[in-house]
Length: 114
Image (cartoon, rainbow, N blue to C red):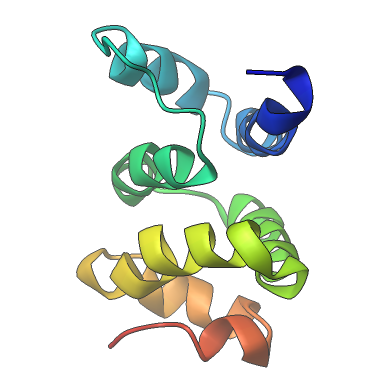
């Protein structure tokens, strides 16, 4: 696989690591036993949601996360699909929905599931 196909995933991971430094260790532990590691954006959100749900993020972290989510939704394509199906649609199953919803733009909020 060429490096351009992994760039969006690596960019997303770098953004998450900046906002949530503890996610880096979680990500590596989550991936260490994978025989066929995924390079998809979806795999990042699938690992990130349980992490952030238990992390008790600060208001500052939530604001940065909302910007990241809004950007992914506005990009469309694989970015929008990954954040919508693997994060926003399941946010209601976590304790983060109430805190994150008001920080998201209307386009991202329209993808939330109650």
